[in-house]
Structure formats: structure tokens, C-alpha cells
Length: 245
Ligand SMILES: *[C@@H]1O[C@H](CO)[C@@H](O)[C@H](O)[C@H]1NC(C)=O
Ligand SMILES: *[C@@H]1O[C@H](CO)[C@@H](O)[C@H](O)[C@H]1NC(C)=O
Ligand SMILES: *[C@@H]1O[C@H](CO)[C@@H](O)[C@H](O)[C@H]1NC(C)=O
Ligand SMILES: *[C@@H]1O[C@H](CO)[C@@H](O)[C@H](O)[C@H]1NC(C)=O
Ligand SMILES: *[C@@H]1O[C@H](CO)[C@@H](O)[C@H](O)[C@H]1NC(C)=O
Ligand SMILES: *[C@@H]1O[C@H](CO)[C@@H](O)[C@H](O)[C@H]1NC(C)=O
Image 1 (tube, rainbow, N blue to C red):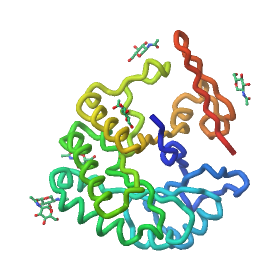
Image 2: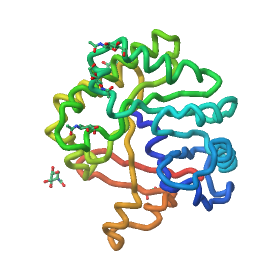
Image 3: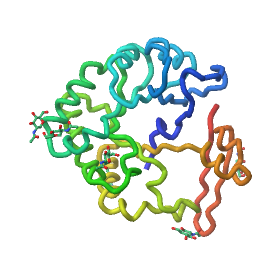
Image 4: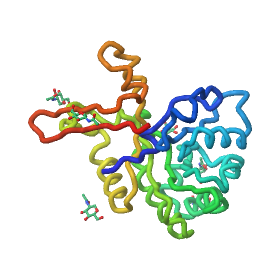
């Protein structure tokens, strides 16, 4: 399954503190545009900054109309998010899903290049909760609305944290957490496969380095490694991560 590069290319920095020169930033980079903070630049200035970094994608954590307006007419591919709080109600109510898509995506599409519609944020990392099991039904209803309003180009999915995995090493030993694998991951993966969407994963290599700085290479944490090869004995499995700059 192909991973959405939007979340895997996650950059952990506040726009206000961005200190990269544009030459250092690859054309593959996406920016997570959060709004937790004070003295935030106005959306237009943030969008100019993102364009200046030559990023190709931007993810926002809601459907802030001022931001979506500022992104209109740019070449940035945009990812928007349905808030966690609406998942339960949307999961049983197609009218509500329709209303949400009509109010939050239709007015901006296609001039704002919305490409990904994410339902909730890292839902499976909260304590066990009914919302886990309403996630895929809500995703299906949102996808139905997206098609109904002619926005079929938008891929629907949900970003998950790496804690969805119970084990991840070596790669061939990877397993999903047993409390979500049958009831959530299988239906989710079927949905993503059927709709040719992506499994979005938030990957924060910096935290892995911070926890074990002597074991993990700093280049890896800073996304500077050019060619990491992981060998997985017993399998013909070489994973090569190229970080294109
Ligand atoms: C969900 O629906 C119930 C019943 O209609 C309503 O009382 C509640 O406010 C809704 N929740 C949200 C977050 O909109
Ligand atoms: C479904 O959502 C619509 C639109 O928000 C609302 O009017 C209706 O009451 C909801 N239906 C149920 C059964 O909660
Ligand atoms: C269940 O999880 C969702 C998503 O993380 C959260 O918004 C909600 O508050 C949680 N509900 C309860 C009862 O813990
Ligand atoms: C595979 O993962 C399990 C934990 O789920 C671990 O106990 C086991 O050692 C791992 N196997 C290898 C070969 O590392
Ligand atoms: C994934 O979708 C393809 C069609 O696009 C289908 O042939 C295949 O069986 C699906 N895989 C699974 C595991 O459902
Ligand atoms: C990447 O690493 C592999 C294994 O160490 C090596 O065979 C290959 O030549 C390297 N490729 C580049 C582009 O450095």
C-alpha cells in the first residue's frame, strides 16, 4: 500500500520559526500548517512563506475558510480535516456528511486544490473509545458525499500515528495493534484499496532520535540520510528510503 507522502513528509516546525533556505527544501516537501500559537502570521503571509519554501503540499487541521481562501489559485495541493468531534454523528448520518462536505469543501473546490480529505486526527491513539469503531463508517459517508458533489478527485482517508503498530521491526515482522486490527484496520485498508486512497501515517523521526540519540543516526532524524538500507534476514526485503533534496 502506497503511503500518502503528505503525512510521511511531515515537517515539524512552526511556520513562524521556519529558517530553511528554499534551496534546502525539496520539491517533495509538504508543510503542516497548524494554528496553535500566538502572533501567527495572517493566512496570506503564511501561504506566501510556504510558496517561498517551494513546498508542493500543505495540510491544515480543519477547514479554516480564510486559509482555504488564501490558498486559492496557488499550485499547492491541500489536505483538509473533519474534526474528531463530528465522527460519531457523521458515522450514522449521511445528511450530516453531505452538509459538512457542502459547507467546507464545495465552496473552495477546485480553485483551492483540495486533494485529500482526512477524517479525524490520530483517532486510534486515544484511549479505547466508540469513535474508533465509527471511524470507517464516517469515512465511507464522507466519501459518498465527496462523490455526490462531484469532488471525486479528492482522496478520503485518516492520518494515524505510528502507535497503530504493535511491532515494526524487522519490517516483515510488522503487525497492527490487536485491539484495532480486526475491527478497524481491515475495513480501513479495504476502503483505501477500493477507493485508491492512501494510508496516511504521521512519522516523527526526530522523536525516535531524541529518545535514543546514541542508537539512532541524527541524519535519519533530520531527514538528511540519502540512502538507508534496512535488511530483513529471511526475506528478500530491502527497504531503501531515499530522501530527495
Ligand atoms: C451529535 O448529535 C446529537 C444528536 O443530534 C447532538 O445533540 C450533538 O450536539 C451532536 N454533536 C456534535 C458534536 O455536533
Ligand atoms: C442528521 O443531520 C442532520 C443535519 O445536521 C440533522 O438535521 C438531523 O437531525 C440528523 N439526524 C439524526 C437522526 O440525528
Ligand atoms: C473519544 O475519542 C475522540 C477522538 O480522539 C475524542 O474526541 C473523544 O473526546 C473521546 N471520547 C471519550 C468519551 O473519551
Ligand atoms: C517480532 O515482534 C515481536 C513483538 O511483536 C517480538 O517479540 C519479536 O522479537 C520480533 N521478532 C524479531 C525477529 O525481531
Ligand atoms: C485491491 O483492489 C484491487 C482492485 O483495485 C483488487 O483487485 C484487489 O483484490 C484488492 N485487494 C484486496 C486485498 O482487497
Ligand atoms: C545505497 O546503499 C546500497 C546498499 O548499501 C548500495 O548498494 C547502493 O549503491 C547505494 N546507492 C546509492 C545511490 O548510494
